[in-house]
Length: 505
Image 1 (cartoon, rainbow, N blue to C red):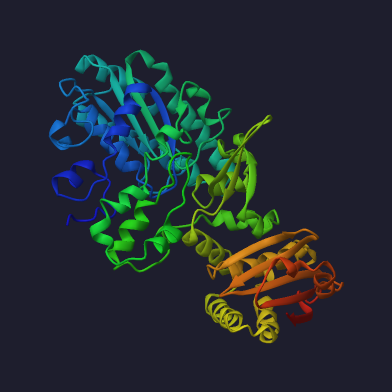
Image 2: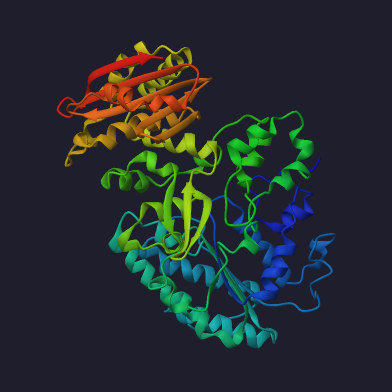
C-alpha cells in the first residue's frame, strides 16, 4: 500500500515519493476553465495548500507529475505560465514584521522567475512591478496563487486596532491584482475566513467565491466514496459507521466530506478514535466571545442563520456563528429556501467536533484533573441509572468553576449558564442529547439518552418547582422505557444547586 501523506502539502513530493493521492485534478481543470479570479474558504487542515500547489504545477506545465490523473488529457501542457506564489502560512505576523515578510516573499518569487524588481520601499508597488515584468519576460499571462491570505489579520484578531491596520494594508496589497488585470491569466486565493466585501475585498470585487458553490463542494476533503474505495485497504475490519459518526459531516453544499487530516492520522494511529483535527489548535478568542456574549451553548446544536452571515467576517463586529462556521466548528446541516431567500441550519459536523468543542469550553472553566474526575463520575452514574447519586457530583461540578467566570458580570443569574455547563458536560460524552426538547405540551430544558434510558432535566434559578413542572406538563410521555425526571433549582448567590429532586418512571 502507498504511504500516507500526513502533513505533506507539496504535490510533486506526493507523486514522486509514491504517497497516496486523491485525484482532485478534474476539479482543478473545471475551476481553471470556468473562472479567472477565485476565492476558496475552508477550515484549517483541509487540504487548501495541497490543492493550491497542484494548481501551481498545472500552470507550470509539469506534465510528468499528472500521468494517469484526470487532467492529463484535458490540459495543454505546451503552454507554461509564470506563477507568482504567495503564502502567509509560516510564522506569526505583526504590523512591524508584515512589510518585511512581504518583501521576503516577493524576493523569493523574483529569484524563482529570474526577475529583478527596482522597487525597494513599497511592497505593494513591488508586487505590481513583479506582475508586469513576469508578463514581459515570459510573453505569457501571469498566474497568482495566494495561500492563507487572511492569516496576518487572524494572527491579530484579539487586538482589533492592530488587526484593522493590517487589514487595510493587505487590502492595498491585494488591490494590485485587479489593477493589473491585463497581465493576468488566473488568480486564486485561499483562506479560513471570508472578510466582508466592504473591507478587505473591496479592491477585488471581481473575485468569485466558490466556497459554497455545489460544483466545488468536494474541492478539499475526502468523500465517502474515497473511503469506500481508495482507503478501503487501510480500513479493513474498522467500524465504518463509527468512522462516519466521528469524522464525516462537513457540508459545503456538495457531498459531505471528511477532514483529510483526521482520516490520515486515524489510519496512522492504528484506527484509534481521537480528536486529531481539533487538537491542532482552537482560537482562545472563541471562548472569550462565548462568555462575553452569554451564548447559550445548547443553541450551537441547531443554529438558523441567513446566507449573508456565513459569507462574511467583520473584524469590527465579530459574530460567533460566522466564526464557528468558517473555522470548521459548525457546518451546514440543512439549506432552507423560502420567499425571503436562502437560510442555513448550522450544527456540529460530527462527534469529534461535538465532544472536543464542549470539552474545550469546560477546560476554560474547570481545571483538567477535576473536570475529568467529575466527567467520569457523571457518566458512570448515568449509565447505571443512579440518578440519586448525581446531586453531590453536580454540586462539585459547579463548585469547581473558577470565580473569574463570574467577575464583571451577572452570569450566575442567567439560567442558560447553568444549562450550558451541564449541556457541555453531557455533550462531551458523545451521547444523544436534546436541548429544549419539544413535546406537544411545551419543551423541557434538556433530554439525555443513554443505553435505552432517558433523563429529562428541568432547571430554575432562585425558586420554582421544576420537577412539578415536568409532572404537570408530562414531557416524558413521548419516551418509552426507563425514564428519569430531574428538577434542579440553582442559587445565584451560592452559584450552585439549592434544590435537587428526582423521580423514576
